[in-house]
Image (cartoon, rainbow, N blue to C red):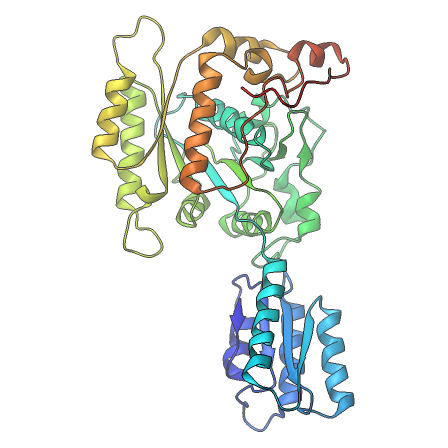
Length: 411
């Protein structure tokens, strides 16, 4: 929200590339040279509408500020740009001014979108299960009624797309955005981004860079930042971003982390995996948060994964050591369940761990991790997932209609 003062300052801010949701104007602007105030208001309203995405203008006018034809023209210009206008009485009192302030607060509140919560799995070691844990955490959040978008930005492997068993050709990869909009500015158009979002049978939505090496297109940093800016304007509660294994090759991921994204560090007890988790936590500790008073550890959380059977490494000791060295949020430890994960992976169509064994120790631990994440992020809309609310996996395989489940039964 920008509350304007001098005309020159406002025009400079509107020409900036940073996103701006609302512009609040009134007839008491500080003049810019000899330009009449009605002309200045008209120019600023035009600049607000010409931005991409457009900025919504709010206009407060005193009834006697301008002749009737000028006043009506300004109000019409504001309304054409999805804005609103408020008229103060000729002799306004403090009570009238307070009403105008309340009107502004109401208008801004109507346009305020719920906060998006971004999650990105992190580790300096490959093969530690980042995509699997991110996907199952995202499904746990979606089961609580949160609108969830999964973005597969692993250009080389497309592992999240494969994990969701998304059929090639059922979605348009977002790497085609630069061909459609070569100069997007700070944000791609929302229509272009929406066309590249595919609904998934699990209830989440998917945006993918492609199915792997078959798509050789890549996206430069400005293009990825324009995509991120557009996604932030969409009505999702949770965005799960799989950025691939190498953050150095994907600098946009660091920008997303600095903007408040939760960095979910996945740790297994093996030497390579625990060193990968420790290295990533060290990197987050050395990177400054935007306010420069803290490091990116303030945005980090730790999720442990048990070792394979027969391993001499102890994940609980590794987990405790990492938490002692790096003060991050503890999402707990999920047990390793190779039979459950294998059942899901070997299915020719998508089924989730919550379809196959919703009461398994793995699912319970993942739901505990989701609850801890929601409590940390203070997400008020979360509700416990209903037992049996998901469609049975065997019915998905057979294509049968879902059986109605009693809504009162909760796990």
